[in-house]
Length: 184
Image 1 (cartoon, rainbow, N blue to C red):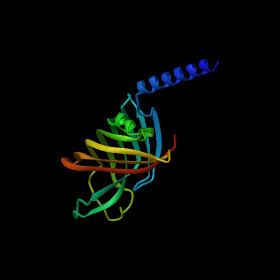
Image 2 (cartoon, rainbow, N blue to C red; image 1 turned 90 degrees about the vertical axis):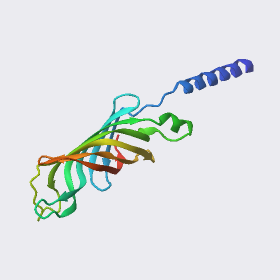
Image 3 (cartoon, rainbow, N blue to C red; image 1 turned 45 degrees about the horizontal axis):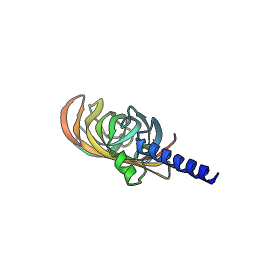
Image 4 (cartoon, one colour; image 1 turned 120 degrees about the vertical axis):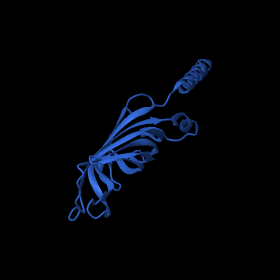
C-alpha cells in the first residue's frame, strides 16, 4: 500500500511538472480599470492574441493648449480618447525570474493614437483658438505593473506626430502615465 501511494504521488508530481513546462503566459482576455492619476479616465484592454492587446482609454487627457492669438501656452485637460495596440514581449522572462505577469504586468511596444477636442475643460476663460480637434499618432515603448492585485501603474513614451484640422503634422514626444484601479 505504501509503494502504491508513493508511486501515485511521484507520477502526479511528474505530471504537474510536465504541465508547468508547457504553460505559456498570455495577456488577460478583458481588463477594465479606472485611472486616477493626472486625469480621470476609463481604460478597457482586450487581448487579441497571446501577447497582443488593444487598449481604449476614454476621458480627460492632460495636454498643453496654445492660444492662437497670443501664442500663450497653458496646461489644461482635454476631453478625448486614446487607442493603442500593444505587444507584450517579456512574459516568459518575468516568469523565469518569478515575477508577476497577472493583469498584463510586463513591458510592451506598440502604436498609439489620440484624438481630443481642442476645447479645454478648464482654463478656458481667455483661451481662443481656431482648432476643432487635436490628434497624435506614434510608436510607443512602455511598461505596466499591477500591485496588490488591483492597483495598476502604466507608463509609456515614444515619438510620433501631432496635428490639428488647421495645422500640418509636426514631430512630438509622446508620454502617458496612468495610475488606476482594476475593476475586473
